[in-house]
Length: 135
Image (spheres, rainbow, N blue to C red):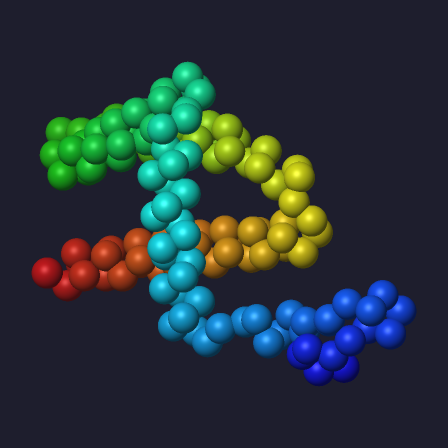
């Protein structure tokens, strides 16, 4: 059945979902606009624990960066790495409940995008490590 055909059972027009999909750049642009809008709207309504996790994340990252750049800080770096991991898990754990109301397809897409972002972070870390080793 093509887009715009009438479903004989209900008498309503049936729209093919594939016809609603845009191209790569169109989807990317629309998604970025949607994310910007949702961050500006939903960013105002945060729980108290969200403020704590949002404040701890940059604090842990900056302390780890300062410690890593200082030769005297090498002895405490394992503790700061552990602290950073705990802060990241706290940050993610506070937000993972969003997947409960999602459909199985949406949950799968969420997991796939999250995993790809994790892999991107790993590759970026390896790139930075390699650049630091070269220079």
